Amino acid sequence: MKNDDVLDVLALARKVKRVSEGGALPTEWLREEQILYGMNHDFPNDLQRITPDYRISIGKFKESQFHSLFSLLHKFVR
Image (cartoon, rainbow, N blue to C red; front, side, top):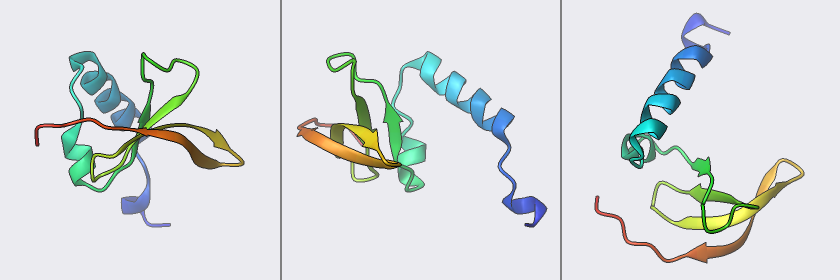
């Protein structure tokens, strides 16, 4: 593995903390084709997944895969 391929976990943790404290959706991560997982306060027992095309799903991880229980309709300003 090359040094460029190493994930800087501390830098990532700092970025997550900074973004989460601001309360804003990290649209730059969605533009980078990242899938975001987090909490949804309306469904505290499940996970929320936001895909790069801004689709929001509520679900659970089972056997290392996300299983969507349902999708939410939500309008984002891009």
